[in-house]
Each structure stands twice: as structure tokens, then as C-alpha cells.
Length: 100
Image 1 (spheres, helix red, strand yellow):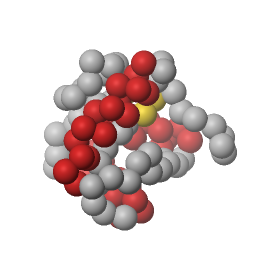
Image 2 (tube, helix red, strand yellow):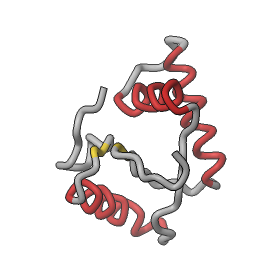
Image 3 (cartoon, rainbow, N blue to C red):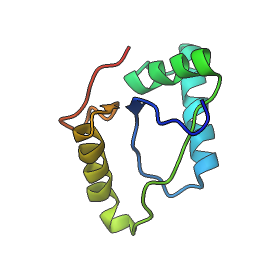
Image 4 (cartoon, helix red, strand yellow):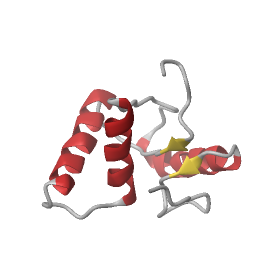
């Protein structure tokens, strides 16, 4: 649904252009689907979204210096988790919710 905000989010930092980062995530997912990479929660979620909606979306939340990227990423994960979103960032967020 165009313009809607999904209930489940993944927040990550990158130095790449967003379109290239999304392509890398999709490539990683396809390798996992083919059994060449370990499945992870994010990969299963991406596959489910593609099967149900046919597309994934990527957006910049902040543009910051590399030295601040980890802290800002953690702040976004916490903020969005407190706002009620299911977060797929299990390694660095107390707001991690398992979504299958």
C-alpha cells in the first residue's frame, strides 16, 4: 500500500547508495533461499514481504558521519521500538521482536 508505514522494520547503517544496499540485501536473501547462506530473521521477513506484497522499501532516516552511525542506528531502533514497531534488529535492541 503506497504511503503506508509497515508494522515491522529493520534499521541498518550503510555507506552505500540505498538502491545498492537494497540489492545487496535481496541478493543475500536469494543466497539464503538457495541454501548457500544461513537463514536469519531478517531474511525470512524479507522473503515473506516479497511473497505477500511483491516489494520491499528502503528509506534514509538520518545522514550522519561514520563515527556516529552506530549510536544513531541504536537510537532509531530504540525510538521505533518504543513507538510500537516490531524491530528485526535483535543484536542491538531491547525492542527486538521475533517475527516469523
